[in-house]
Length: 616
Image (tube, rainbow, N blue to C red; front, top):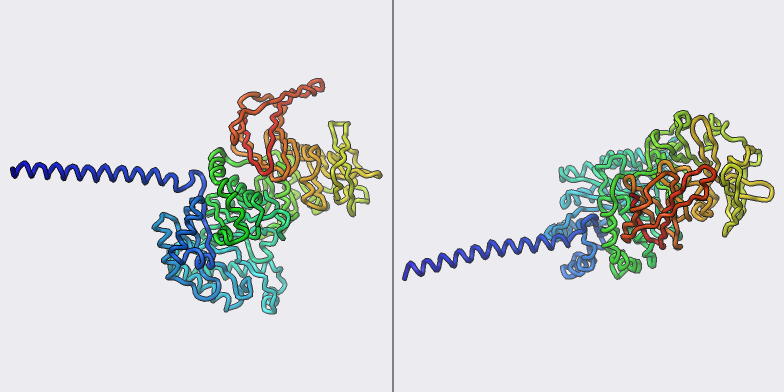
């Protein structure tokens, strides 16, 4: 009886142990399966909470749950919690909230906005520096990572600042000042409190006045532990910075190259973007196409329903699965046309954004490009930046021509170089001053043909009146008395020189007739691998050898064509986003002139739609 009872006890214990083991196994499997739904497969998102967001959206346990339920579709893997920019940082509150996020498996970082009472800090003002240092010491008690919002700049023009600047430029004075004070009053105090802390500098999108206000991408990236990039193109027409969408992509491909290991992510926002969901989503696409390590959403309070600009959030949420799916379709290294942009340089305002929105795939480089068939040079290429002026630019560009390479430059840069050998590349009439306006565009066709196109609107260009025969002017704006250069093409030494005359209104570059844009793009056919034809307003992003991503940033449907005169496969062309086989057309109309059969792949792209063409 006793042994039977004991045996029953043993069986029960074994059953219990097995139940626990297998039950635990099933539970673990359920957790594992659930964890796959917690995060996106290819993208990582972070949410930034300002200090007021912390108080209003996270401080109360009930509101915390409500807030995170609202943001659950984003599947954030990271949050940033900002300490107060005025008064004491509530260390205990930040610790409690940070612990809640960590318990949820979400990484937590601190954040600081280095502002003074009057706005941007004065980095020669002891009170401002003391306040910044105090906030950094408080945050370092809670966090091992701290990001600086993009207010690490100064606009101070008080008597002390003017006296200290002396004979220096504001750019040289302020960048040196902020580098020194960053080390003394931001980095060192935080690391004294927490030796493990890493500090991230986040760069604003208003690049063209970075150095004037104290930002220096090269030296500050080397100084700080990490860096983040601001996209923030917002509404492309009404926002006061007027930054073209493609510039957001360029910033991400350019600035992190100082030290790619330090790039932690891309920062975008919806500030004052009520009703601008398309433009907000366009920011996300630039981060996806740049293959950003993390997409940082500034900020929770702007996206929460109490804010009018939160009306972009539902559209964003609907697109989240598509963002992730398409991120997984991008294969291979990014490639394109090198555009020479030394760090700290300034030039034609955001010209790289406008060129990119003409379906010219760009790869920004801070060192002079030597290997590509063609390369783009703007006033940025010559401008004095944080690493000094490239005084040998003309010599290096001529070196490319001696080596059988091409150069593509802006008219502004050619004028800057007109006291070098480049003065001998053009013969100009004395009427090359002022501007010319017309709605007639002349296009060169072959050696002797030409076509006159009446555009939908008139365009204004700086006057370029060449005495050279008309074949130099591939694209020109026509008037009764003359036609003035828009795209000039000169064979020189062993290469080709292309000179682009930017319109008075830079955005008009995107509005030029497609025939004019097609000729501009032809300068890059060898590096791209195909000719690209179609209207402006479309960005092109190349991955690997055979992948062409196209993103329509205009409000009109665009029909683009990839054309090749090389013998290529005419089957197995696919559009990956919609999983469609593409038609391939063969054009033999020029065979009688000795031109091979042209292979043409047309693709129609709806407004704000992305397609990925996979060549065989």
